[in-house]
Length: 108
Image (tube, rainbow, N blue to C red):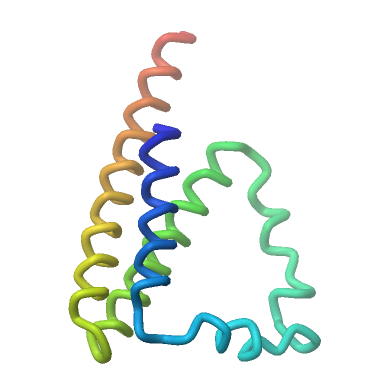
């Protein structure tokens, strides 16, 4: 599982470097002083490793979908890369669920 997640992260880096969008523009676009997430207590709701894991899977899938849709407008090859990666994350999530189910049955 670790290797697959690491490979997915590496693929995102490769896609970002290959895209025609300047990476330097992204940090400047964030309003760090007024960002609503700065004062949010949402993460306090995730008080188990399982909840945190699945929350982050949801974030990853949503982020990849956004990138896929954005790049569809400007670079269809990069968009396809994000789409493929999104489906790999779906498979990893399914594997994590299966591992979790197997572990919970083993401890009964």
